[in-house]
Amino acid sequence: QSALTQPASVSGSPGQSITISCTGTSSDVGGYDFVSWYQHHPGKGPKLMIYDVTNRPSGVSNRFSGSKSGNTASLTISGLQAEDEADYYCSSYAGGPNFYVFGSGTKVTVL
Amino acid sequence: QVQLVESGGGVVQSGSSLRLSCAASGFSLKDYAMHWVRQAPGTGPEWVAIMSHDESQIYYHDSVRGRFTISRDSSRNTLYLQMDSLRLEDTAVYFCARVKDNGGWHNFGYWGQGTLVTVSS
Image (cartoon, rainbow over all chains, first blue to last red; front, side):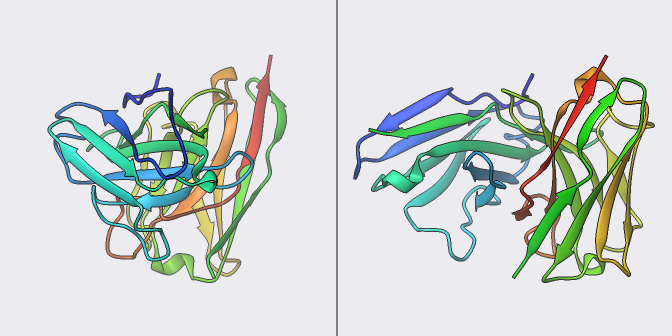
């Protein structure tokens, strides 16, 4: 069972904005500013989209943004595009002994 | 260009061993911490292990500690995961991943495409 809770699916029309939540505890999401988000197209390796809660790697569209409040982190995709359709996972540093936890994943569908 | 290519997966019986490889190119394993992450069918990913850039720090998830060993061959620029005493619940796609920068560990900056390990009874 995944440690972080995400909605199973989120959908939106092209151009709309959607937000994916990632709920943990004070021992992971709430305790550290080390939340990251990954985009995963089946059959390919996941891609880092956001790290350290709000930072975007170079080359990632500024349509992707991250935030955190308490034990819940969020990924917002604005100006939704067909290419954004994929699975998205959050992850957080959780200290020892199991250093990192992931979310259950959210399937994003572009209508 | 960072590239990671996993290999070594397959179908094995419960209790047996398997060694996964992760061939890295575009950077040196001596400069970056590396993770192994797995994803069982229909579930989210699960972190498995991490090795620091200088091999001085190695940590494992509780579920694999004592059975799995992370190592590397710097001359081949290849990361390994030796998996012993395999269990049915170890069935998953296994990914190697490099941290984004050599200044911190707490992300999975680059991933391979994964290799499937199936443990049968």
